[in-house]
Length: 267
Image (cartoon, rainbow, N blue to C red; front, side, top):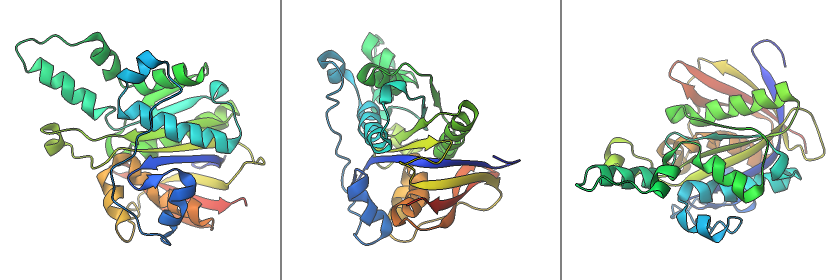
């Protein structure tokens, strides 16, 4: 780590989104050798949760569990001991809609379960229940720059704490009428395990710094996904990781500061 830059290693990758069902199936799509299919995200049942919790959870929990466990398995680590950063522009859109509907009715009685699932760190709590994780977890939000903010937070924690950190960046759509004002096109989660040092599971070395350059756009249909889901702002980085070639990309972060990433494969 030098002044103004952060350097770490990607040791695990997970993804779940529309036409992106896990890292192995998504790699050829991100490389451009297989066309992207704009299909609804297939949310698997969260079998790691007890039955009572399993019935109550929404898309955000299902997304983070599926993608997060994939990334942790790739890294060869134990989820129970891994610090985590949960980054989302708005949390669970469906649950927010349901609460707003109740508040706009004459009843105005919100169920404890709805309220419990409305907090921004709900996915983090369910992750702890499902995996037995006891390490610290953070939940943050930075609107369309939420992936960039989560990436910086995770990499900083990894370097300062000298430990691997799991990043989970996720979003799910709001139903109408909120969708009209905050359109999110699909449910999607990107999970990365970021480590401070080179190890046997390292896939790429990444150096990050702030930049005043505009964020990189993708060519083809995936650009629609990148701009349609805040968590999908990670796609240019994932495309480089999928191709396994050295490269550089610029991702969305703050209105007047982007996140420049230099990627060097380790294998």
